[in-house]
Amino acid sequence: MGRTRADNRLRWLLSSSAVSNLGDGVGKVAFPLLATTLTHDPVLIAGLAAVQFLPWLLFAVIAGALVDRVDRRRAMVLANVARAAIGGSVAVLVAAGTVSIWLVYVAALLIGTAETVADSAANALIPAVVGEHDLEGANSKLQACEIVGQTFLGGPVGSTAFALFATFPFLLNSAGFAIAAAVLLGLGGTYRPKQAEPTRFRSDLADGVRWLRRSPLMVRLLAVAGLLSLLSELAQAQLVLYALDDLKLSDATFGLFAFVGGIGGLAGAAFAPRLVRRFSRRAVLVSGVLCCAAGFGGMGLTRQPVAAALLFGLFAAAIVAVNVVLATVRHTLVPGELLGRVLGVWRTVVWGVIPVGALLGGLLTEALGSAGRTFTASGVALLAVTVFAAASLRRFPIDDKTASSRPVLPLDQ
Image (tube, rainbow, N blue to C red; front, side):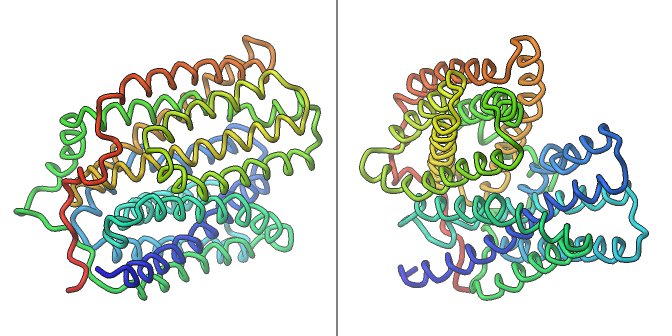
């Protein structure tokens, strides 16, 4: 495909992703706020956060298998339409005063389930939309859409809208997903993966695991990503306690502190492709993990708010750059007809360890006596991951941009 056509298709995909991430960010704030108006039970409030995350543990592999069997653009459209309908239904129930905490749970679970399909399809569409010429750039832009939509805009818009009247954020949530679905209609072409022969869905579910097991490079990358996710969450789950207790910040200044992390994430998305071109994927990945270690380790050793905020921004920039490299290597090496299934297995592992890391972080803070010491422990452990990443990836062709075994998807039918 021509460069101009690829750029146009990428714009449609990114525009849809930006709007859907905004709707997602609004919903992730609005649902917990709504829950607090229905119950003050801390277990039920905490349970809502688990329910919002649960679909990635239960359905990521199934969603991946699904997007490897159908047109990926159509899957995104239908998933966004489903999310719009659910958000709109919640808005009606809130306006009518008939919503309950259990309906909030069900709605959050259904929206999260549709999200596994939409996000899996969006990631699998990247190589089909841009071809081989700019995978790093496309992945960094997709990361930027997520950061801006969910961190910078979604949270503030959702909380402000809820303060005006409780129905408002759910209307915005629904509208965002509906617009995202409509924008995708501008993305021309067919995006259904080619399959050599019809297969059973049950067999498809295992194909992603089998392919990963046969790829020593991807197994090592998955191990690095899983360890990075686990050990980062060890500290990130304690961020509020660190800011309020160790840095003595107020609730208002904590928002500013978190905002610096968002700025760092955007910087990582912006500079990752340039760093890869100047150095290599391997160098960016290993140095990115090292910067994560330095960021959290340094935060554990300082009680100066400005220095801590800058170190948090360093961590955010580094982890986004690492994610850009990991996504690009997946797109380069995984066969196109298996991309959804491999991504499903990947996210089940990498996102599945997040609640484990959060729990361990809480226990560690309790044992050590402060969140700052947990950040130090996380930084030291991430140094070990840096050594593991450098040693385990040394002999693998992570920088071979021609190593793709992925067939081109039919775009112009």
